[in-house]
Every structure is written in structure tokens, then in C-alpha cells.
Image 1 (cartoon, each protein chain N blue to C red):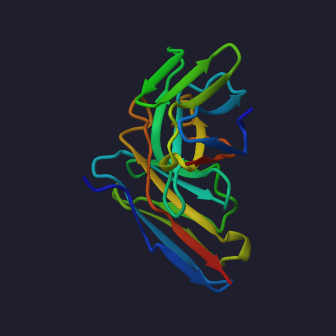
Image 2: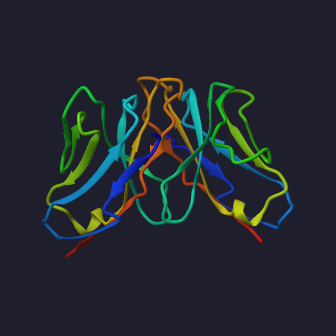
Length: 115
Length: 114
């Protein structure tokens, strides 16, 4: 079946612009996670949802970052007033649930470059 | 206490040899330990995972060894092949108040020489 998809795959934006990154999880997966991965590093947790409820946003770096999942499926990560330090690979993952079915499957990521 | 420490940072193994990557953790609430394989330009792919009620799990050429008392776990790749050349990440998570978010190690870049 289809895996996790993300769009766009690449985004170049100018400093100060807002960007929206989209994640389409595996069908039927309740839990959806956002991570940020710097080059040569492991993914770093940003936030996660069960259905449409944002359960944990402790990893969001500051209030310029926000995420939503209004219908419990597709999620959008929004970065307002982008800065160069926001440049990174943003990855989305989904799992059946956040309990016993905790295996997370990652999407291909969105490479964000802020110029 | 949330950290997962991974070593070595890079590893070169001859074809047919055994690749061993180690991870250590502090948070005793962690109850799920997956390994991910990542090829350049791709997302991390779940390779194998273990829960702390067993000391070893084997899937094909890949084995996780888990030492609960030492708070360490390792990935062994038997009969390593050039196609195994990738970056490997260990991770850990807990269901307690954290919803299974993964804490990743720093990664190991494995190169298998023909």
C-alpha cells in the first residue's frame, strides 16, 4: 500500500516568508509525528498527533512553528517568518497508534532551504 | 536522561564480516527500541525493533541484543554486504506520558567494502 507522503519535496524560500509543509500519513494510522533532521544527525522530535488532537508540541523550537491535523488525516507544519536556521529536512512519520502499535514509518521528507 | 548515545560514528567492514553498532540510554521508562536504516536521499526505514522483555531478536542477518541492566542495546549485521552500506540510527521511546515519540541516537555511517 501507499506509504507516508510529503509535499513539497523541496522548498526554497526567502527569509521572513511563511512556509507550509504537508504530510499525508498511511491510511488508518492514528498517530502522526513531525521530526526535523539536520545533516548527519538523527531526526529530532517536534510534535505529534493522535487523530486530530495535538498531544505533544514540546519539541517545537519556538512560537513561529505550529502544526495542525484538522480531520485526523493530513497534517500541515507551518513555519512563520522563516529564518536561515530553520533550513533542514523536515520528516513526517505515522504509526497505527502511540501504544503497542508504535512502529513509525517515515516519509521522504521536505528539504527546506531559507535564503 | 532523554539521550540515546550511539557508537561508533562510522564503521568500515569487509564484505562477509560482522557489523556491530552500540547504543546506550539512561531513561529506564524506555520500553521500545527500534533500529532504522537510512540511505542517502531517503527517509529512515524501520529495520528491526525490540521490547525489553526479551534479550535478543533476530530477523535474517540482523540481530538486536538487549541488556536491560546495563541499559544498552546493539545491532549486529551478519555477513555484511555492500548493499548494507547506509546510515543506521538506534532510537528509543516510552509510552509513559510521551506517546511513543522517538529519541534517536546520533547515527552510524556503515561502509561495507567488497
